[in-house]
Length: 428
Image (cartoon, rainbow, N blue to C red; front, side):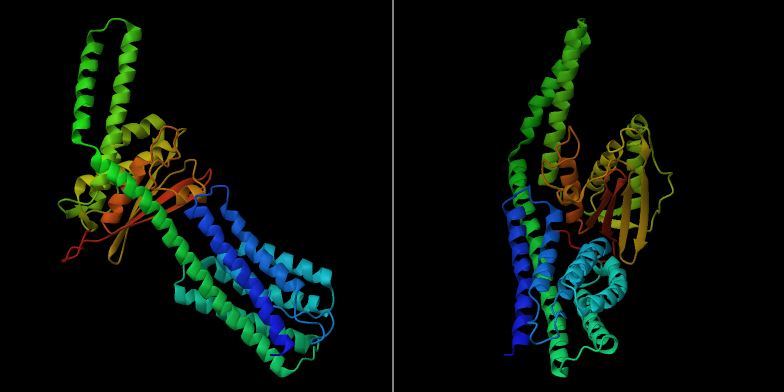
């Protein structure tokens, strides 16, 4: 094995090392529930790879003095594709700064080739995460090939860097193959992370499910009886202080009953008698129910102009209503100082999508990732059970929930449900 190959393989190990650290990071953050590890810290790993690759390039005996050959483009390309154009700009400035400090003709090669490569890279980065797995692997590999050929072309034709042909071929092949391998490994890590998140959430939901199943309907009977007697006492009570205390006690009993109802609904959120439900009709019914709450909060509701008759899904009417009530109620309560609620209904192929968009306080990416967990809520007096129940109902209807939010600008819940066909989908 030549020194050239050995040094490039050492560069490749410098890229693999941070990947293993990423895997450990995810295990600590989600499996061990270490909250002080923030999502932005993941950006350290491509930066670390770039620094190591540039500080330990191919031995200067093999290539012209201060013309460094390394695999810095691999973490740069993948960091930009997965982190976005903003993070890619930071990595570009970092590489150019380090290369300027090293000096030599290699800086000018980088100054010309890397910004040119960044133009298509930034464009692709905007849609990269929306691509399929196969498309992502192909895109990153092709960009790496273009980047290696571009650097080689600038070196040979602009600066007349004389290297043996087989070394250029070896460099291009290792760069492209390295990008392919790292992309596959990174996708495997992302898949493992997704599975890990679901497992952690499933464990929590299983505990809550067992607890909900153990709560008997008898618990509500003494609450109902106590509420009735308190209400009777409140009607006859003349002392305003005692009357206020009784009113507070009744409100708290109602609150306890609502929590129990949410638990019981969570334990049995699968449709008992699936039927065809018109989504447009149910949403309008929910908006009518939530109109008083919206008026109290100064929230403007959308006009009744949703699609009817052509957007039918298979499920249980009452539970679908409960799902929409919880989500609309959350959106209204996220706008305590007033705002505008938008509800849109869209049909596409075999699915119908309901978008509920508010102009409230919004959420961080970490808060979005925890939505649907028991007892997680962004409200001061919330329990998180309403959102958990809604997500559970959508899951049993074989639907999907997508959440987009920006702190201070609002949140959009997008609920995607399969339309009813002649053969109703199996609900498990």
